Each structure stands twice: as C-alpha cells, then as structure tokens.
Length: 437
Image (cartoon, rainbow, N blue to C red; front, side, top):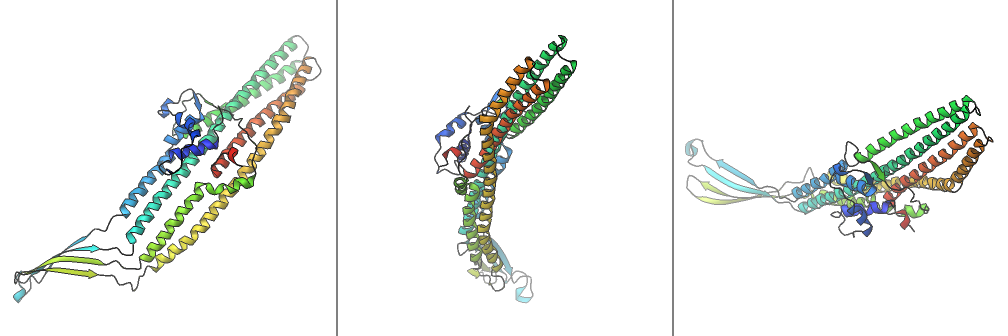
C-alpha cells in the first residue's frame, strides 16, 4: 500500500470540515480515504489499513465530539445575542385607602403601561457579530482538532506498523538462533565442538526469545493505543497493512518555514482580531446610554375619565461611562498581535525541531541502506560460512549476527522517526513535502 502521506491528511480534513471551509474544492486524492469507510467500530476485522483507521478516528474520536458540540454551543450563543430585550409590563395604583376624599378607592388612579429598552449605537448588531465570530473560532478550533487527531492516528499507525516489522525481525532472529543451536548440538555430539559452545548458543536463543516477547508486548500496547483513537476499549483487528518505505529527499528548511503561516492555528488569529475589534467598538458604544420608552393607559376613578400616558427614561452617564471596559478591550486588541506572534514563533520552533529529526533520520537511512546493512550482511554470510569451515569462532558468528540485526533494527527505527517527523511537519505547513518547491 502506498504510504498515506500528509497530503491525504489535509485533504481528508478539508472534506470532513466542508461546512467550515465550503469555499475550498474537494481534492481528488481524498477519494481513496473517503471510500475506505467502515460501518462501525465493531466491524474492524482482519487487516486494518491506514484509510480505515483514519476514517474511524475522524468519526468516533471523543475529542472531536467535544469540539463539534462546542460549535453548537456557539451557534446557540449567537441566536441568544440576536434577541431583543423583553418589554416590561408595569401596573400602578395611586391615591387609595387614604383619608377624606382619598378614602377607599374613590379617587384611585390606575395605570397600566409597557416599557421597552431601546439599544442604540448598534449594540445589538455588534453583539451578534461577536457571537458569530465566536462560532467561526469554534469551527477553526474544530479543524485544528481534526488535524491533530488525524496526525496522531497516522503517527500511532506508523508505530504499530514498525512494531509489527520489529516483531517479525525478532522472530527471524529467534529462528536463526535456534537453527544455529541445532547445528552446534550436532557438532558437539560428533565431538567436533566443546559443550560450552552449545551452552552459549542456548543462552543466545533465550535472549532472542526475551527480546521477541518484549517486542510483542510493545506491539500489543501500540495496537491498543491505535484503537483508542476511535474510542475503542479493545483491539478487534488482527494486524495493520501498509509500508514505511515512502522516503523522499528533504527540502530546504527556509521553504518550509515560509509555509507555516497557512496553519489554521495562525489563520484563526485573523478571526480573533476581528472579534476583539468588535468588542472594543461595543465597549465604546456602551458609553451611550440606552433609553427606555414607556406607553400606557390611566383611569381616574373619581371622574371616570381615561387617558394615555407616555414616558422616556435615560440613564445619566455621570459616574460610569464604561471607561474600564473600553480600556480593557483596547488592551485586548494590542494583545492579539503579541499572541499571534508568540504562536508563530512556537510553531517555527516546532518545525525546526521536527526538521532536524527528519534530516537526521533521512541521512541515517541513506547510510544504513547504502553502506551499513549491505556490509553487515556480507560480513555475516562470510563469517557464518567460515565458521562452518572452522575458520571463525562462535563469538565471531555471534558478533556478526548481532551487528546485522542491530543494523536492521536501526533502519526500522530511523524510517519510523522519518515518518513521524514528516507527519508533524506536514501538519504544520498544511501540505505534503513532495509538493514543496
């Protein structure tokens, strides 16, 4: 299977967040991931591919559910922000239960009125805009969470795939050690070798089995961690299917740093800036008092006459002119630029660290593949054949075998480090490394 690069990650997230980024086109390369769907978590049987794991994680990851619900919370807040203040019903009775002409209810004046607060200076429109921008921020946060979960799933899948290959490599080592022990046992029985040689071979078999058991436990833990990305509490798949061999030359770091501004963690700050600017304008509008208009009907019991009443009340901004909130929101606007720059520096630092990891892994892979492993294989075969002919001792064979398998393990570790660093870099720049020019 062709390695599912970060290009598929970005494209898959975009199609899942189509409601958020509806203006973007659906990339054709995403069809492979979209078509590899499963009906539910219980249907994961047999070999699991990366598209299937990604599909499960993006559908069932609990963390994504939290962010998705937060969008609904913000949408509800926007609905509430758009509502007008409720009118007030006022019922008033005057001049009753007094003395003389005002005794009982003879001269009572009864008033029924309705009052309505009128928001001026565009307060309601600004409040609605702030709430809608809050919804946009929640959508950006959801997209960032999708990318994080996606990258996390790719990384764990990579570890599972590497763990599988390490288990297979250690099984070969156990098989080779057992075969070697059997050959020595035959030569000991024939009197051609000392029994001490057989004891050494048995120790090597025992050590190889211990290493195999450790690798199997590491694989089981990685498989459980992978299943947890889609909220599963147990592993139902038998193995993962894929390849780690999609290794390409590393582009220049400066080109990658120039692309980091596309990260949604940074682009969301444009929405934050607009929201805080609107909050500042709302705070300034808060200095203008909102009037309350009243209108009603009054009845005079002594004469039986009726009349309409009207009133207007306006708070006097003498002591509180909302100056604290205005100052607070103004500082928030200045803070936005600093926060964005701080976030950008953090991402740049992360990119530099992952770039160094990627470069180191790539250079190690090239050296291992082109020089170290071929020489180790040649040395092992030469020494093993020479041992059969009595030219080399047991320790020479043991050392050659350890060197060969250590080189192969180093190759698996470095190719894993390469893929992990690559996934993180592509998450930061928002595109696959192959497309960086």
